[in-house]
Amino acid sequence: MRWLTSIAVTLVLVGCAGGAGSQSPPDWIGTPPAANATSTFFTGAGTSKEGDQAKAEEIARGALIDEIMRYLGVKITAQTTATARASVDSFQSEVRQQLTQTGSGNIAGLQIAGKYVEKRANGLTVYLLAKYSTTDLAKEKRRLEEVFREQVEAVSGPEKEAQDLEAAGSFYAAAARYLDAAAAASKSGIDNAKIKFERVINSAKAALDHVAW
Figure 1 (cartoon, rainbow, N blue to C red):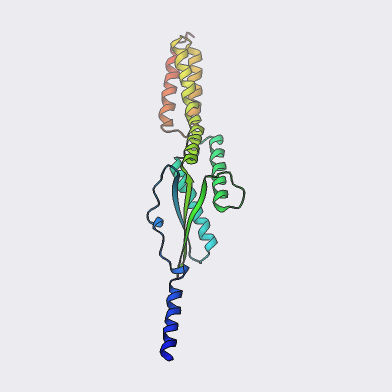
Figure 2 (figure 1 turned 135 degrees about the vertical axis):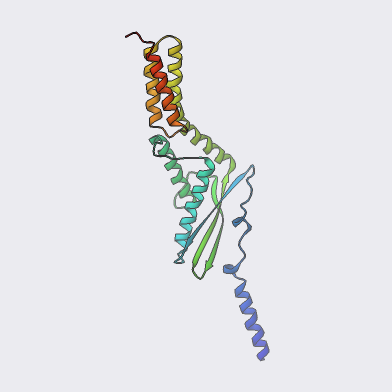
């Protein structure tokens, strides 16, 4: 009977070792699924040394959002226009709401597709896998690109008008529009803003050289 008891105890221990807490990590932790025509995938991880799973999961959600924003190519600088910044902040808020499922959520194509909790003696780590509709993601990328393109057009628009005015011989009006473009460049977060600023300032000076004082 003693040997039967030993076998029973061994089976119980084996059963416990194979429980949910010891299951092998899913493949997507190391290698996220490749994007396809239907879905694009993102991963995020968060660790809590205190073993606080809710805290670790919140960190993982933040990492997910960062990955999504990097994919969208959003770059916020100190010079980013208030309109562009507000649009990004609103989108990030909607993403967080959708991922936490604390509200109705406005991003139907986004959801948590997988979660894995790795418990260790010195804390735990939560891994999250998010699935985003490839079509919806592409639409959002185009929308944000359009918002940020407004910053570029704030410079290129007045500059083009100035060039047309200069070509028509309206040098004073051209200089004024070049200065408008320079002002926009000085407050913009667009690439090569300093170069654009110097260029339109020089163009304004050149236009004024043609004005008969």
